[in-house]
Image 1 (tube, one colour):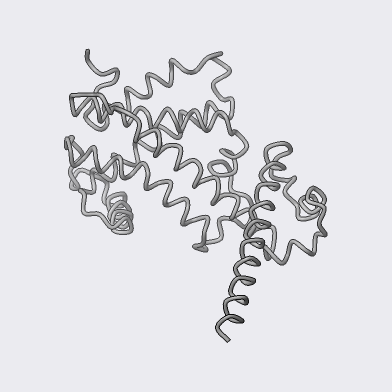
Image 2: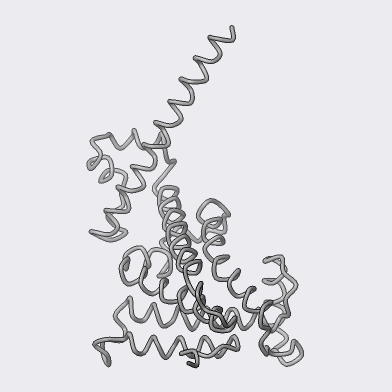
Length: 251
């Protein structure tokens, strides 16, 4: 009985591995279609054709197109978050001054976000552009989980900046009450006890960074600039100032 059970477990494990590998191949095939032809190209029929499968066969892995797209988003968020985390880990290792080290980490995270986004405009648009119909339906699933993990990469860095070298933030009493209430709810959802003013600063940093990168990715700086890189360098200075740092760091 034990030997038969072991054989059954091995067969089941092999089947699970094959199923996971096929599901991942479906996701990667869909991502290639996204990159080459846009989100409208992500159809079960097109994916099946690329993989030599039947469209109904894909339903054994994903219930519908929406579920597939959410898994694509989850994978992209995970990839992006890992790249940014690696950039942070490799920054400022040799810097003797704590402020310079913190600045190096912040700059590395922002530069990696910009680099990745410019190299993956289709994926950036899927994650940060206009949501596809049906994706923003209030559900919490793997896409939301991976999106929060990505956001946590930046938030963890922000907490390190705050705890290592606290910087001035607005007092709660000086923030519009309606905004303060929203910030408080967001802070509670994050599970932190930092001041509401620090949460506001974190969101201001994100909007500055996202705005600068999105304008470049979507080509909205071309009316004035052929090379927006020096402009982004100025943005890094603005971000550093928001968290009490200086960029470029003083020699």
